[in-house]
Length: 288
Ligand code: PAF
Image 1 (tube, protein in one colour):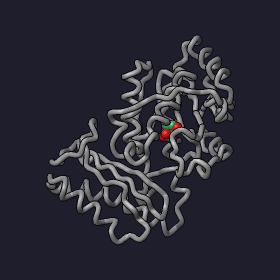
Image 2 (tube, protein in one colour):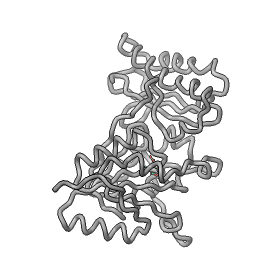
Image 3 (cartoon, rainbow, N blue to C red):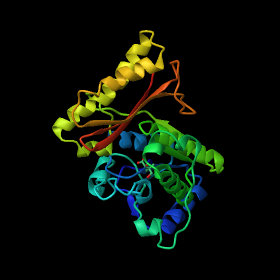
Image 4 (cartoon, rainbow, N blue to C red):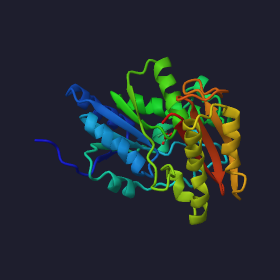
């Protein structure tokens, strides 16, 4: 009889997690993992849904990973909402929520990190030194602990998906990556756990990010091919927004992340903007 949704088993000990996952593999069950930092929104839930559809056992990981935050970033205030997170997936058959402690993941004597280059260097990598090394380290640890056959990530963190893919290929990690589309609010704002920081007024300003991406796609559809001109138009959308500080607006090659001179269907527009102190990222392919 098919299993019914029920509250997932919460495992916090990495060794217990590994033992559980090994039992599943021994029973020929395909394990899907959805790595998150919690504060789940509908975008995360869509990843969990996809894993539940495609795998025999889904493991949701919830861990606010300190090594991917810079010293002046929002690690301390990052929302920690375990009960609400469990409620958000209660309708799905998630077998385990893996919620380790920081000391279990990073014992005091730990001394190893994954070093990343290539797609980790520009854009987010340049603005958040050490961020992708922290992401790659925790993702590799989660992959080692759970040894899933499949892992689900959101397209909203476009550069992160390239960094994780590079790491998986470079380090021969036997996991299939599935990248799922960005989910947006009705007004276009990309779903993000950090949207919780936005006041009503800031949220209105934050709409400029998706508006800039819509503008880029519209201009491309209308025949625009000059990347510098389009970038200037996108940047101009932020000049009259008090409290908006652009980290970057870039039109890039989808694989190398190098800026392009001539736009094409596959060009990806990347944005990072601080809105009243909240740093938001978003992206879209021009030929959507
Ligand atoms: O995308 C995120 O939420 C995080 O970067 C991840 C992949 C869970 C690693 O901490």
